[in-house]
Length: 317
Length: 305
Image (cartoon, rainbow over all chains, first blue to last red; front, side, top):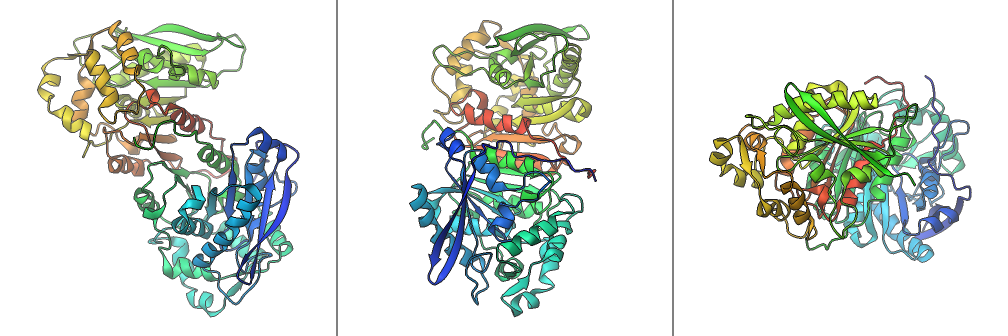
């Protein structure tokens, strides 16, 4: 396989990273921010973009990954370069956030986001943010938009599943439901990442990615992750109500993603009440769109959604 | 700053002469890198340059052609048989005839630009023409944008009203158009989605060229839908829909979308927009969506779908 190196569209050369912390009761939650002072100054209208991770990686593995010699992988740096104030967090039990006896279900993730929002507001002065979530991160982000619509200005969801009906991945995953329920955590290592990256199709991630992801996850305090979102996705769907999502929304689906069927996502899209909505289906993409070989196509679509010019008419139309 | 450049051409469909219009930044120069061609296909009631190159007194940014020329495209349009400056015949210029027009137009585009595979946009029955052209000539269509589209027509408020006048549409090959008719296009779905003065400017321009248009696409849309087969469209497709557009229901469009075999497809609804998207108050959002679709980075994997 010939690898074509993908570079971020704009590198202002001054992207910084900042560590912040939120508290959910006794649970310490790690927040990570990236932005470019130069790009922010050039695009002051671009606000906060909050990235919500999924079941198997902590935040920086999913969204701020370095794979030296293989181009740009960090979604955070990419969108910081484009002028956004990019934030993410490790959910309870992930990465640097507190490990507890809990399972870190989707509803716990919503509580995590509720705890993070005031921190982001205090630092940035913004009260509502654009959210992006992938896989169970899309479920967390969608459920947060249900619970706190005033905090979500735009919502982009990739690798989403709604009811789970007909999902090949979830059918397979449900075969191990007893295992997921028997413990609050499971091992996350190179072998498990290899399985995630190749379960849909081989050839849409580079062979070096599982090792890079595993190394990043270990460096971020990982090695194991909570089981709650796996359990939710196997037996508790739907956990997001599309009829209660009030903001503009985009659903992004990779053509090889086995987490949901087209029909399931079309049903979700149709039920969204806000007519500012987009359904984007993309070839050359599997479940992990953000760190796939064709991630630059995902960046393009997400940036397009986030930079939609404002309406110049009244909302009474 | 490079000047806007335009040129007229004539395509020939047998004995029928078809008017073509082209805009881009700067005249073509030998040896220069080609600009990507973007071809705009008009609908049932006004000709190509009238709709796509409209200038509204005192109001900037209404020319679709100039906007995409500024973005770097080589923008073309064509008056279909019986419209604008093109020849009128005894025919009523139905959707299928529009495909022949586009084939003739494509020969001129290829001759002038050297490009044989282009991006095509159609609005309303222009979207039906464009989609049918993509079905018939998949080798010519790189990317396809369908705006104000309708598939089966089931549940369409606009077509229900239009069908009440089927006796008029079938009585002759042409129908009269006048100022009140043009103004009604901009208000029938939702007043306020277009600025005052736009319908008037369009009426002024079109009525200076002609006061009749063919009936074929109206007959097709009222009595012959579906005229398109989504399973035959091979290229990436964007379906863009104005929230208030009465020409089709969302269900109808999602049915078409679902049947498209390509896995590169987008369905985008824009609020505050009605049937004539490119002349609405929110046209900047419409352009944004189109530009993003046209500028999608290429795949870099080796998988053959």
